[in-house]
Length: 299
Image 1: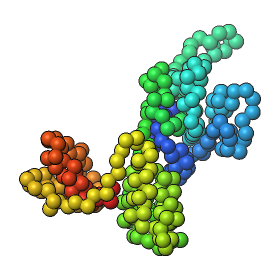
Image 2: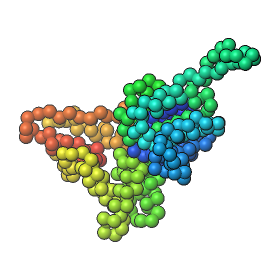
Image 3: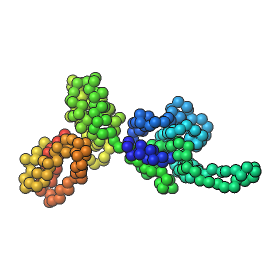
Image 4: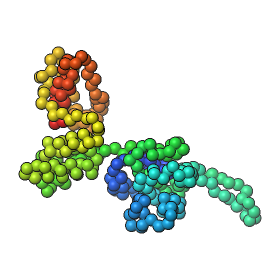
């Protein structure tokens, strides 16, 4: 969220936010933006309360934005990337980002003597636009020089902990911090659904980290064809002949247990391990043992 707010704070007229969580984008913008926040979707219109009328609502909303005179007004256009191939829409957005010109009359009623540049596009009116899309490639080439692309990151450990705490208020189970670690890598909506599934599938209606991990494993398997989910039972003691690798993994355990603390301390995130060898040399066993050594043996 900080990158998106930074571009908006720098007065970029239009920002393209790549995310599957448009609801969380809107919620966080409403919580942190100082001015009015207006949303638009093709199905619900403005703020989901004004149904779209007319043959081209995707163009009509640009007219509404151009006519908006509110200070620090922010418009969030949901899934608007599908309309960006329209040359008229692309040109209008480029005009939003380009220099605005003000005509100054010479007082005689004739043509103006000079056309002087003022502020950039909509920024001159204190109006800005955020386009949300799940597709990074949805922004056409002609807009890439004017519109920055921002990856809206997945919720962090503290945000997932809040989601877990909400589930724990209604169901017994593991500590919210443990549940937050199990939910890592999911969107906020996926996290809520995973917790609900874990409750339904548990015998006593409890929400446990293992139940969440089981749900997450199925999500990963459905999203990535050919991915095999393995529950590791081997330990680092099972690995022989790779003493340096095992010692390195042991030093990383604390970093994996508290990744945010490690980042705050300035430790670089590990990029991974490449195991190369002949068949039967112990690569698969080592990989499982390394996962166990890092506390990732649940998957």
